[in-house]
Length: 138
Image 1: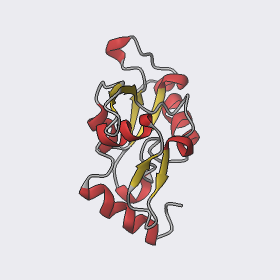
Image 2: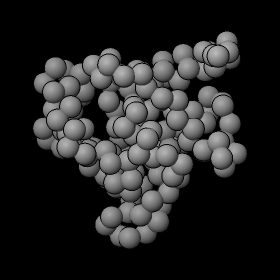
Image 3: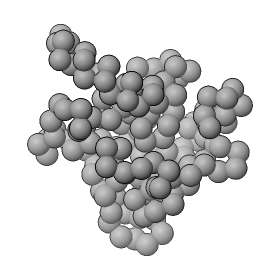
Image 4: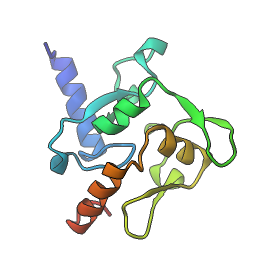
């Protein structure tokens, strides 16, 4: 059963995110899916149900992330923390390919997040191409 507090938190998180996944920037509407409230610090590690610890995540990113908080940068091999939507600026860590289908990591955190969350999986690339053609992603 959803409480009023949970409903309010969901509304705040969704509106703050602009109805987009805070990791891959997928727009919720055209996916036909309900996006998840992702615990940035997982509950099993003490993460709480607070505005500061919740991010809007598409099912793809949320399920791929699971309880991960860090991953290996594919370029350097270093273990780094994953992108944190509450602490980090998206544009500092990620950029779009020229055709807007592929996400590219600008930093070790961005590259590790793209790989860990499988953000450039084939289905994601095709969806982003269509969203771009429809004017739904920048």
